[in-house]
Image (cartoon, rainbow, N blue to C red; front, side, top):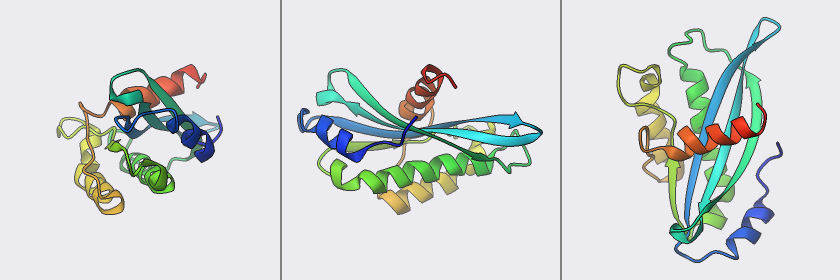
Length: 156
């Protein structure tokens, strides 16, 4: 999958009303290759057309080595998802400033889940870098569903 193309996003947005809403999210999957752990990251921009119609998902995929030592508390991988959301926000900021925008994090604030290990760090990072209060599970559909779905239909 290629990186999200700003020109393609801008062209698509030119056909949308100001009521269009944007959502940024990222999901990852850990896998082992030749004894080494890697993570595949799917980062998405979901454009909810006119805020009441269908949507268009722009996505990008990348992978890198995963150095998390504790699989049940994947803090490095989860923070890499957060960094990718912030980077996409910053990259597309000039295109998105006229639209309602949410950043969705695939992190569960419930301490019974491993992803809760980075909740304050992740939300603080997005607040600081994007000046947006991020949404977490169960309200983070762009990360939990859209990125996950894009990953699965891409054949990953």
